Image (cartoon, rainbow, N blue to C red; front, side, top):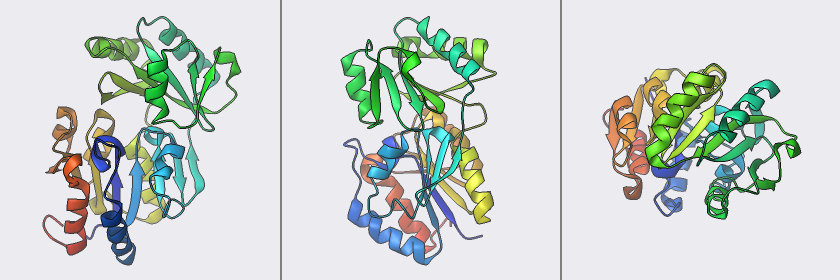
Length: 269
């Protein structure tokens, strides 16, 4: 069967280490993707408002599986919005408050939120991924649909934090690692692969027609789900283990290299 959908993670995958990509090369490819009726989807843990800023020419034509599948936008319109209930949010915030050394961004539909007491360096780092990031004095100031928590802790404590959270709150939230001490706390069952599956159902696209690219723990499900899951040369071991195929690193335009093969119908396509 021919390829009908390409889904890309952004950081460490589609973007190089300078947070850039070869725009002219990709836009030329995108014209050909449209001609061959191949959908292009951005699937990332980052905020929708940040993701669409990378694709000003085509943002209203493509789909975004943002916030690790919690918020899906197709052709500029809301497609699916997940939500944590207030009781779950309260329990998660209580756990976070009692975890020493943990920095947190609370992710909502309209904005992301960070306590003003959090380190300024953490705020500046997260603002790159969440351009709509509001400083708050307390959680009571948040009036939004909440669907994810982005956390960061010392690498040496990340594994223990994730396992402790899984034991205490695994029934309401799932931790997924994205590397460098970072973990997203997502709604169980709502991940990049589930978001892609929703879009595939509407578009009539089978997993055998899907190509995915990723480098981190939050890409595992979509790398496994697609017939053609590609890990980057720079990927985490867990992503490499989940993918059937591999490509060049993010700094070597590994995604664009494979898109050329798709367009040309070269092996394994």
